[in-house]
Image 1 (cartoon, rainbow, N blue to C red):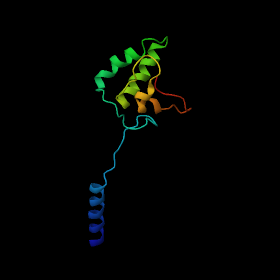
Image 2 (image 1 turned 120 degrees about the vertical axis):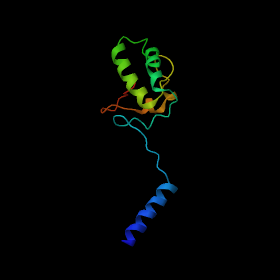
Image 3 (image 1 turned 90 degrees about the vertical axis):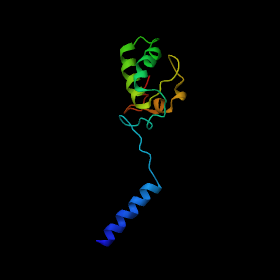
Length: 101
């Protein structure tokens, strides 16, 4: 019993001394827990702006909002600039293509 108690105390000390950052993924390879500074309620307007230049508006808005909810970031402009949001940029589909518009 003393060994188990010692082991639990040792694990607790290690957990406090070396915390592990847990990152949300949201569907496999979200590139981490966001890192953006948007609030969830800001995603809709940012994605409306991002998707304003596409003919596939419904699909763009769906995926942009999903990506924004996970990454809390939407790249500026209507196309490209994904380097501004690494999580948004690095989230891939099962086939390896970009998930976020």
